[in-house]
Image 1 (cartoon, rainbow, N blue to C red):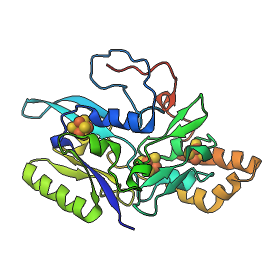
Image 2: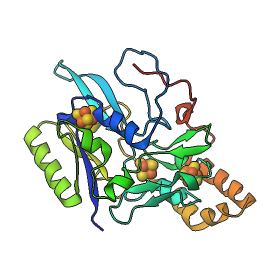
Image 3: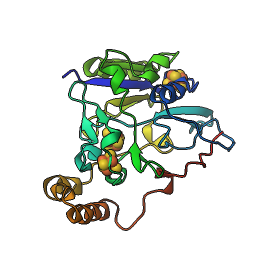
Image 4: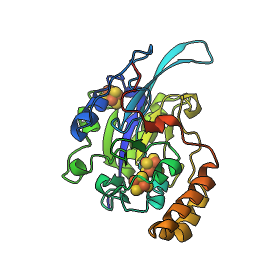
Length: 267
Ligand code: SF4
Ligand code: SF4
Ligand code: SF4
């Protein structure tokens, strides 16, 4: 296996959103009706028909300067992926060639366990099809020696598709060059992610970023004991319910993770 990384350098991103559009086009994802909410961020969150999103953020630095920060949000393609662990149908799986996390929507049974388990709040459920969606790193492209569509579209070099060793070298060199609070995000949790960022500011400055994402301990319990039950009719319902309670307690996942097809907001 040649582990590959999609490296996003936020310091080179102009937020043109060419990557977002390329993702929609390659994956044949329909646009939704949107509303102007005073931001170029559109739609406001990931959706079942928006696998990646550029975040726009006004940030007042400690010295008083106002900065416009951008961040690409999508599946992080975790090395230890909670979604793969909990998925009872095999719809989510590790790509053995690159280490990314693929998805076969035909196999999805709509149980939403991945929605509850993902530490980055990525998978989105579509009420109309009763299936979940997420970025699969353009598996049909990368398997045919092409770059992911977003990387191909990026005009500034902010996105690169490179092997892990090279990605780490590039990221560290860029952090050294930028200096200040620049840092690499994605290499230190969930076994390392296959979408990694170079951030010019500290990670905790970015709205909505997950500062210390972890796979819940109970996921291991699910893997060894409860997941087999999920394949057995009523046992699956019980096992899934227990897992959901362990991970999230009695809280319901954020309603935006369960898309209303006609409300997408944004600019
Ligand atoms: S970010 Fe979430 S959906 Fe993507 S691989 Fe990790 S656990 Fe799975
Ligand atoms: S909804 Fe259930 S079956 Fe579908 S991908 Fe998520 S965990 Fe797997
Ligand atoms: S295409 Fe490149 S520069 Fe444009 S928003 Fe995406 S990452 Fe940023």
